[in-house]
Length: 143
Image 1 (spheres, rainbow, N blue to C red):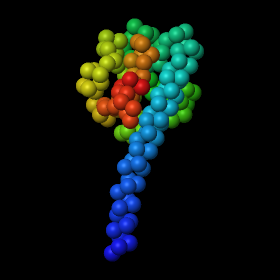
Image 2: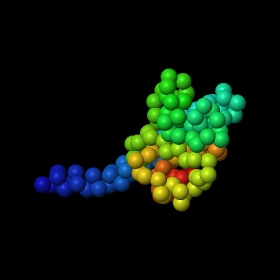
Image 3: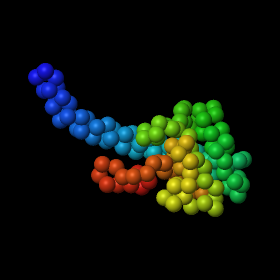
């Protein structure tokens, strides 16, 4: 009985610190995955006369689509070999906004939680689709 009590006390001491490390690991992974996505977007644009991925036929006056982005990025795995996942919801799908939408927190709140990332081709901006703040008080949206 004494051993069980001691183990319970140790677990109560260690668990909060362990959870803090898990949180920081997710934050680091989110930043790393954002960097991968941003570099892929820039690389694609550099190779296509400044036109970012997502536009059908690389025509920036057309409506960008998720289907086009996926084809440009992942077929034949030229820019990304796999979808980086949002470490908070474990989802790699990218929501593509159209040119008339603004990528801000209000817009992000209207997008289904079945997406891990938000992408605005007109500004070549990609954001983490997750609410709240990190362990240092920075909004995840501002990563």
